[in-house]
Structures are given as structure tokens and as C-alpha cells.
Image (cartoon, rainbow, N blue to C red):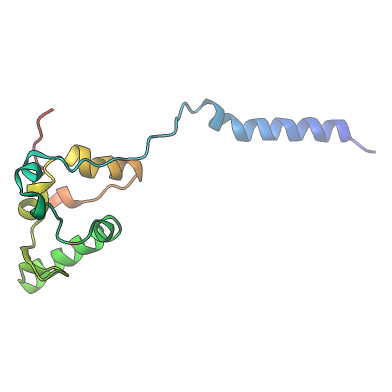
Length: 133
């Protein structure tokens, strides 16, 4: 009436089947991204001007929303100037404003996007910068 042995063997087989993909996936934990901001263009700037359009923290968490807003403002409203929280104005352009300083797409953009498995569609419309390998 009690098939305890069979149940335990069945549970062990079930657990083995569930954890097998994790054991043999070969996936290793990836290193936390460390985006590089030491591009030649940034290094050419005087120390006092080596600031992004908004704070580092804001850009880390909100850059995708900001870029979407820029797209809408430029394309739909024909407004091409962005006034930052510091009051300085910037041309809203991924290629000419953002990528001018962050010319290292591979070490800056791709590193975090790959880490978070995000595939932005920026380069579906914009021309992807060419980098030296």
C-alpha cells in the first residue's frame, strides 16, 4: 500500500531532471559591466566640461526614456534643442551629441546592454558608429 521507496526514487529523478540544465549549461556568471568613459573625445575636453547632459545617476537609470523623449520631440515636434537641468542646451541627436563623446559603443553601450540582455533598436534607424577593433 505504501510505495515510499518508489516515490522517493521518482522525486530524485524529477529533481535530477529539473536541475540538469543548470548543471550542464556551461553558463558562467558574467562580470558586472564597467562602461568606459575614457574615449579620446572625452579626454580632449577640459576637465570641467567632462560632464554628460544630465547627472551620471540620471543617465544610468533614465537614458532610455530620455532618448525616447528626444526621438518624439525631434521627429514629432520638430524641437531639436534640449535644455538640461543645468540650463545648458544640447542638440538632441544620438549620433552627434551622445556618440560624439561616447564613441566607444562596444565598451560603453554594448557592455551594459549585453549584460542586461537588452537589445535596443537605436541602430535600426541611426547609423552605428564604426569602431577600431
